[in-house]
Image (cartoon, rainbow, N blue to C red; front, side, top):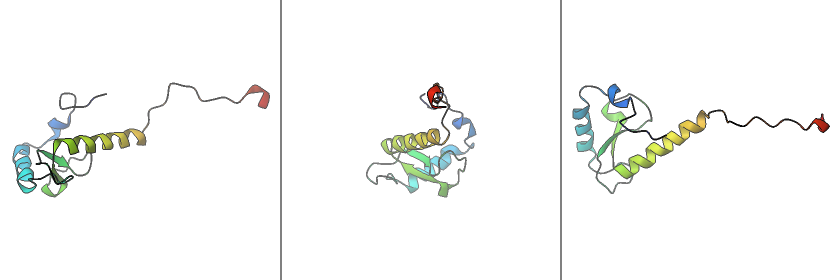
Length: 97
């Protein structure tokens, strides 16, 4: 399932002054804090899925690094809380009871 701003409730949880905070983060971190090569264009929460919008909890990152980081965080979250499978668990063979 793809997640984006169109399907996320994340935007509604941002503070009213988010544009100002984002501008401050990008001004402080002109280069991506992950790769250090490309210009930062995204104000990223350092700790995944938090609503801490303090400047020290945010970092400027480039779009490619943000995609990789977000994907890794989503995969880790899915692995931590797996959905039950559709297959039934194996039952012991009746001759081995």
